[in-house]
Image (tube, rainbow, N blue to C red; front, side, top):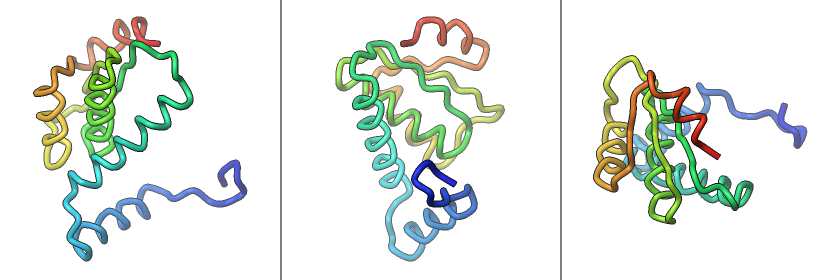
Amino acid sequence: MSAWGRPLHDGASLRETDRRAIEERGVPGHVLMEAAGAAATRVLRSRHPSARAVLCACGGGNNGGDGLVVARRLRALGIAARCVLVAERPLGGDAAWAEAQARAAGVPIGGAAELAGELARAD
């Protein structure tokens, strides 16, 4: 249950929602990822308006891709956002697209071995 007394969606129901948007409605996966990253960026900025150094720890799935979108958007706002990929495999699909976009925007992206040091530098 959420704090609002309503159940939260589990991973399976969220994957099904994404699948339906992509397959039945024709929404490209990277468009969904961009929207999720934009929403997460807004929430982060509203809850932590003074943050100047942000670290996004990104796994290998689409949530990791969302984190890469967040970092790219934060850098566009002048915030020192970095990413650490903690995935055990190369990113694929829409997450790989998000990684390419983040790298092209100048987001520093490190590996899992850098996580502790990067966390120490983040707000």
